[in-house]
Image (cartoon, rainbow, N blue to C red):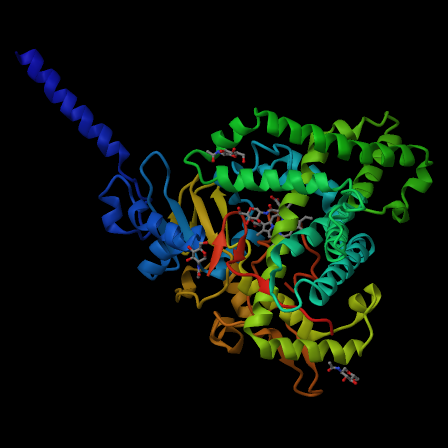
Amino acid sequence: MLFYLLLGVSAVALAVTALRKLYPTPYPGIPYNKDSARRITGDFPSLMPLIQATNEFSNSVFAVSTQKLGTPIAQVLFPAIRKPFIVLEDPREIEDIVLRRNREFDKAPTAIDGFAPMFPQASLSQYATPKLKAQKRLWADVMSAKFLHKAAAPNIHKATLELLQLWNLKASTVHKIQPFSAHEDFQNAALDAIWVAVVGEEPGVTRYEINKLRSQVAGNAKLESPPPHGLFLKEEVTYINDTIARNSSSPFPKWTLKLETYTPRYRKFRTRVSTEIGLAIRKTVERFKLLELGKLEADELDTCMMDLVLRRQVLDAKKANRPVTDPSKDQSMLDEMFVMLVGGHDSTANTLTWFARFMEAFPNTQTELRTALNASFKDKRPSVADILETDIPYLDATCEEVFRLSGVAKASLRQAVVDTEILGYKIPKGAEVLMNFHVDRTPFPVDPSKRTPGSQGAIDKYGDVFQGDAGRDLAVFEPRRWIVRNKDTGKEAFNPHALPALTFGGGYRGCVELPSEYKTTGATEKIFRHPNTSYVKVRPV
Ligand code: HEM
Ligand SMILES: *[C@@H]1O[C@H](CO)[C@@H](O)[C@H](O)[C@H]1NC(C)=O
Ligand SMILES: *[C@@H]1O[C@H](CO)[C@@H](O)[C@H](O)[C@H]1NC(C)=O
Ligand SMILES: *[C@@H]1O[C@H](CO)[C@@H](O)[C@H](O)[C@H]1NC(C)=O
Ligand SMILES: *[C@@H]1O[C@H](CO)[C@@H](O)[C@H](O)[C@H]1NC(C)=O
């Protein structure tokens, strides 16, 4: 009897303990919703309906935590099998974390898990290790201004002219009156531009669209030109994009994605991409292998990013007197190149789609931009050199304002790698911090004594910008917030420091380190946010 009683009691105790263990365990001291701590499901009951209603993930997290509690830092609670997310919305502290606190914060597991199962060797799938450092060093120069001007600018220009050709055709034929969705056209153009900049081969996706439309307009049932070889890229990018978008909203994204890598579809993807990229790699390596040491140092040889990286590898091997290992078997090379394409093209296309959206929603800005462009280029179509060399403050300001307000990569995650603090709150080692990169509302007030020297230093240097003109009505698209007028000459100039710019994150784990001159620097969010409607009407000018 006693035995059974004891057994019963301990079963109840066990059950109670087990249930307790399921309750969220908030980090001490950081604000959270008290009700959420009292239920196993934590913040889910308020979070999930919001995500479903708005289709926005990060924004919903901010809404139920920092925004609801009215604090720059808070936490969202999950059932105890998952640690809470610490949520941070202060742009200056975030800037300090990404730029200057790399010893305390690295990429978070939740962010790594979204890509690592599919592209384990890409830099975006790795923690900050010596291996990553070497890989980043190898790729660093492809993002230098000099190299971008040489290898990327002419290709971006060409892709843009093709897009204009397509739109001219649409405007004079099937879409004379009817608006059409710009998003897919931007995706194709970005795909063309990035792939040729990375690999040196043109996929010809936009050209194919032009040919298709021409045939359709001419009433030909059959298309004369065959699909371009590069169309496979679009298929594969679409597959990866859809898989990551879908699988990352499953309860265990890492395992769902890992499982996907065992499917025939994933294996087909790997084979196709390694074969194609492998061919391009081998061609280039053969070209470089024939060259003498002295000649190999010349960067005139590079036509694309891949060339530069391969030339370095051949050069290093020759210098060390060792044979050149076959880089087409090097998975980090393949992963890095494909991730650039996947990560680069949709983010770029979405940014361009927001641009179209803002130009439609703010017609005065559109007129002002047209006037500024016409004042610089008159009625002639500018060349690549014209575009690169002409200083048009209003154009820079418009681009920066599109980056700011589009919030294409709205938020990012870091993990504390040591016990540390944010705004005076204790952040234990291993805690994940969700940072808002979207500067679209006035930050909550912060006690300056709680700031880091780095964050306070930026405020001392650039001023309390959120209280000034640049910080007014942050939900409104207004490029003029990035423009200053010289008091003596009356000349206008672009001020990249008018507000903190977090669109590309920044620092060591930021978007492929942009050169400092570029650092002039209702939606749906899956991987990248894009506007719900992206219809445009175009007419030739
Ligand atoms: C408008 C376009 C783009 C936006 C808004 C964007 C934004 C971002 C953001 C926010 C991050 C993460 C930063 C962080 O967590 O601190 C990132 C990382 C990255 N981006 Fe971009 N990006 C864009 C275009 C591109 C392009 C064109 C490429 C390549 C050609 C690229 C390659 C990468 C890579 C490789 C990383 C990972 C870096 C790392 O993990 O260390 N992105 N990007
Ligand atoms: C990537 O996925 C998103 C979300 O599902 C979708 O809106 C977008 O069109 C996709 N992009 C490509 C290139 O398939
Ligand atoms: C993961 O992605 C694949 C390929 O797009 C899809 O077939 C599968 O249903 C997805 N799984 C989950 C759980 O979302
Ligand atoms: C552009 O500038 C030229 C010369 O300054 C002027 O003749 C032309 O009308 C302008 N076009 C537009 C669209 O403003
Ligand atoms: C955007 O579209 C999604 C569904 O596609 C919808 O749930 C959401 O309410 C829309 N947002 C706005 C602001 O219209």
